[in-house]
Every structure is written in C-alpha cells, then in structure tokens.
Amino acid sequence: MFRRAVFATLAIAALAATAVAQSKPNFTGAWKLNIAKSDFGPLPAPDSETDTFTQTDAGIKDLVTGNSQQGKLDTTITYNFDGTETVNNIGGLEIKSKAKWDGPLLTITSKLKFQDQDVDVKDIWTLSADGKTLTKDTHFTSSMGEADQKYIFEKGGADVNASAAPAAGGKPNYSGTWKLNTAKSDFGPLPPPDSETDVIDHKEPTVIITVDAATAQGPQKYTLQTTTDNVEAPVKMGPRDAKVKTGWDATNNLNSTIKLTFNDQDVSMKRVYVLSADGKTLTVNNHLESPMGEADQKLTYEKQ
Image (cartoon, rainbow, N blue to C red; front, side, top):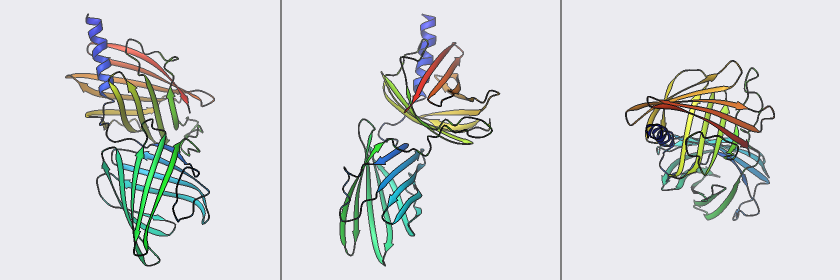
C-alpha cells in the first residue's frame, strides 16, 4: 500500500505540472496555407505561405514566409495577450493590433492606413478539435467598403524552427514537432498518456517546449520556457509555480531540472534529452523524486 501511495503521489504531481486552462488553444508550430481551401475574397491570393507560431503565456510571435505577386514574404508579427497594442510593419504598412481571447477563439483587431484611407481589420482564429487545422476569418472595413477572407492553414509544412542542425559548439538543436511513441516508451510505475505531441522551439540559449497530451484525467497542455545557462528561474506550469534549471552536460545532452511543491511535498523532475544521430528520435530520460520515493521513465519521441 505504501509503494502504491508513493507512485500515486508522484503520478499526481507529474500530471498536476501539466494542468492548465483548456479554453485557450496553443498555436505553436508551423502552419502551411491551403490556397485551394481558402477564400481570399476580392484580394489576390499568395502563391504560397507558411506561418510559424511561437506562443507563450504573454503572447504569440508569427514568422510569415512565402511568395506573393508583390514578391517574397518574410516578416515577423507579434501580438500581446494582455490587451496592449503592438505595432508591426508589414510590406511598408504600419499596423497597430490588439489581441484578446474569447473562450477558445483568438480575436485580433488591427488598424492601418492604405492609400490615405483608414482600414479596420478583425481576425478570428479558430483551432480545430484535432489541432490540425487553423482557420483565420478576416473582415476588412474602410470608407471604400467591406471585404471578407477565410484562410485555412494545415499543420506541418516547412517549419523554419525544425532544423536538426547543431545549435552551437556541436550541440544538437531540438526544434521540431515530436510525437510520443507510447509503445516504445517505458513509463515505469506511472500511467502513460493516451497520446502526446511536443513542439520544441530551440534558438540557443532559449528553449520553448509546448506539450499537448491526452490523458485519463483529460487533455493536458502547457508551455515551458527555459534557457541553457544553468540558472534556475521561476516558471508557471498550469496553476502551479515551479522552478527550472537547464544546461548542457559533458556529452552535449540537454539536462533540465524542474522543482515544484505538491500537497506540501517537494517534487523534483530531472530530464535528460538525447537526440539520435539522424535527428529523428528524441529520448527523454525522466527521474522523479519526492520524500516518499523515486521513479524513472524513458520516453521515446519521433519527429513529425
């Protein structure tokens, strides 16, 4: 009974670290515009477009690449989730935007001037239930009239963050979309998730890991941002405060230690990230400790 209680507590602590409000989806990843399925209204369609999002609790960054009749697309757009205005310059136009959540929908309102005319733009972003389709409904209003567009993005495409090239000094780069292979993984005494996909954005020294998992306790989503300078820093993992410290070991593997308190017990999770030589398999060796016991896991992820 004691052994079961130990592992049950560790399992609850691990799951609690992933708890987060489910009303707000995470758009992190590379999204390719499906031109055939989109409706551009009276405006010209681009020849191609891929949007790569990096989302944190504070906001979202959108790296847009592709081609259009006006030339190559290569710009970065940022939005804040606290309602404050951001100013982005796109194609020589200054665009002022505010973003806010409306349940699971992200609404972005923007203002700009085009040919001395004031233009108001309202975007509504909707993520499909399976997380594979992003729809942007756009409404333009100006003194010259109104117009609507519907952009359909599909997850995947040329992710500029998905390179397996070395980060620095021969160290690997973990960026990409990684799907947990539950059959090849060893969860020890802890229950496995039904599924899990991690999106890693690694731009040395910053590493952002966005986890999207389905478990017996329901969907679990969180984003963990850390740096590889071996300096412990506070983070928010769902409703819980935690501390994380990340750095490189002597064999150029990424090591991350997460500390949090659950039921007045200190819990520590030490994770070692090992990338295969071909960059297609990521193994995470996870060691959990609490005053009531220890447990080990070996998680195998495959690059998508």
